[in-house]
Image (cartoon, rainbow, N blue to C red; front, side, top):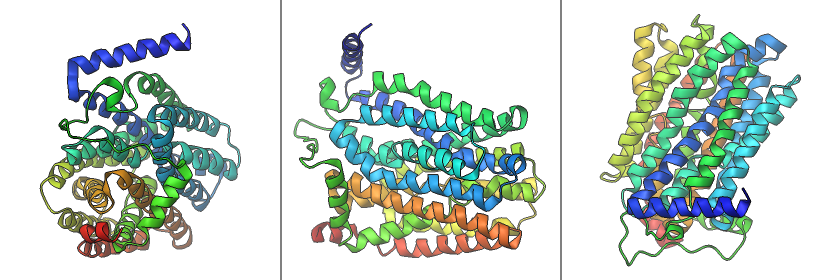
Length: 433
């Protein structure tokens, strides 16, 4: 079958679904993007599963392995605003399919590494660049393009894909590593990424008008944001240059830096190793992450619903405050099932519940057109914080022999972020911009 025939069949299927579902077709797109974000989360969870096996297999230091994780986390965030600009300019479908091909190749190549720098190149740089195109900024872009109403709820669902990715992938990857060796982990992620390519090609049109629809909840007066005249690089950099002149950008950037510092960089990367230091087997520790994933799935979806109804600044104050206190609590617990379960519940409920209110504040400050790109730069701050935590915690563990101060310091920054959130005034920033 020729490529032209494939395109014709795909277009016909899209139009058939659009006629049957109407504006509800937006939820088909959400489902496909959810699956993409889920696999991306699994790829970013792989380094946390591999720390102990690689340490045993090659004798590498925890700091060296953490460096590879930090590279991936940093690029995962840095790529975000450029990925949004690429999607805006060249299309969601092309950008995602290219990213999935690169991610699949990167994870497969990781099975061949024999030196720490090779790990930093494959699971760090290559996978980081690819997964950065499938980060939370992708969710923000899709929500703005396909939804005029209930954006907070839609963003909450897509953000929860990160938690669900942890829920599905991390325990499974830990079991694969234990039973079949660490190489089986990277092969599993490579296959999952490759399997998504036809799903994106078939079920994700570029925009609602491509299938004769308006955005979900939109009336006839709704006007989609127009494609920018400038190129992706100019779009991304131009949005940043305008945003940095406003105070609200720096408040949002600071809180999201701390969000990354207190989530996937610290807990997502080092929790399994921390549990190993306290005599908890790898698969059981991965189960703890899965438990947090369940509660985060609930908490983040609920956060999206709350964001549509309440002051997002107050929500952020509560989320960051509880997160900071739970991180300070963890190293002082006895790591029993009961006390770890308490941590999993309180920490899990707001792991990434901060995303829907942060996106709402960003859109209020910078508008639907620039909001997703500015949010991409704010997410870059998140991943810079996460990369810092991944390397910082690994170095503290190598120097001090434990993770105590790493978790206490991270908890203190969470409390600081709760206070900063109350100073955000998006309406003023919109006028200034």
